[in-house]
Length: 421
Image (cartoon, rainbow, N blue to C red; front, side, top):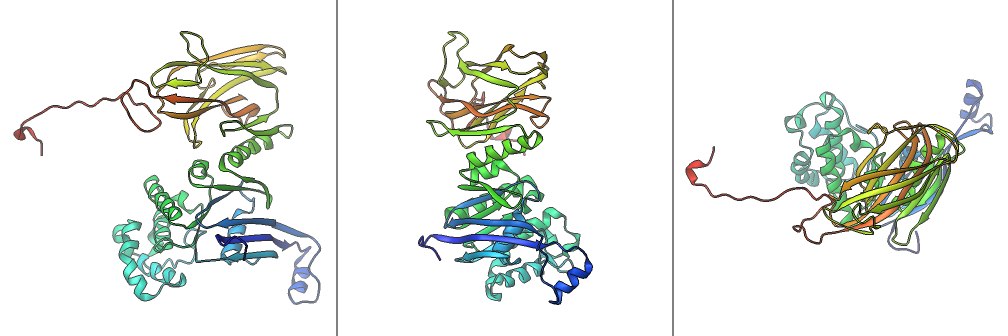
């Protein structure tokens, strides 16, 4: 299939088109072969090419209608591509649509048996796996009740438990987990991570960008059926966020560059207001800080230049860890510090004092200059990872994690008769 023996999925020049008929008669004549297919066609996917290697997690992201689900259906074989070739090496387990292939009149157990049979599992295998499927789904007595009385979350639990009863070579998940509760989502992603560590390749379609950052090695961004960006999670996710804002204003530009420490800087916006300088300062000495200490008093100082007349300006600040998880964020809209009636040439200095309650590690500061509470209203400038700094633990009790809680252990002895029931 490919020179790389670790390649489990190869998608080469794949397109899926649907003909556009001028009317019912043209459609009927085409179906019976009396007339050629119409010249016009709608492309759900166009010239898609990528590979997935063993143990790799790939996310496919994009707005609704971008062609994500159609692409997954072609990979699983439920839809045939109009052009191109798809080669798969190994067993695929897919969760595309909630309840797909399930019979609402069958019980959960019967649906599990039927779905397992379609996956190629024997009766003996299903009999051995059924206790684990039932235990992981955690739907109690509903497991032997008709599917039609299940909630969407219960159906998602059953579908995931069946699809992952045996570790596949390729696991495909399309938004199905988003209907489950947070507890089951956590358990599901833990199993997905375990599969990945054991060599399963993951293809994930989701709108949850935190899941993409934490799980995936590569990301593909689809727009109008085409790949417009492919690369590392931080690069593609930040570009996607900027693209959404750009669609609100066609004059917005998106620029990306990777810094010396590996952090990717993504800038977008109209440029009506710009961050000219941002610094992390020790408020006592006014010295710039590159490596902060846990519990140290700090201050983010941000200098803004107004390029065009603005009736309303909001500054947003967001802290993220190295994996891209948001640690904290807020803006001057929520703190009632909105600046109004600004003229070109004016300069503003914003200060944000705080105590460093972060754990040891590397962190970044993202800034947003907007009108209103969200950058989707009007984005003057959005800058991901504009400032990067480290946090070290010099004199505090050793702890792990990204949050330095104000916590301490206390111990007291008491007699057995004081124990409560």
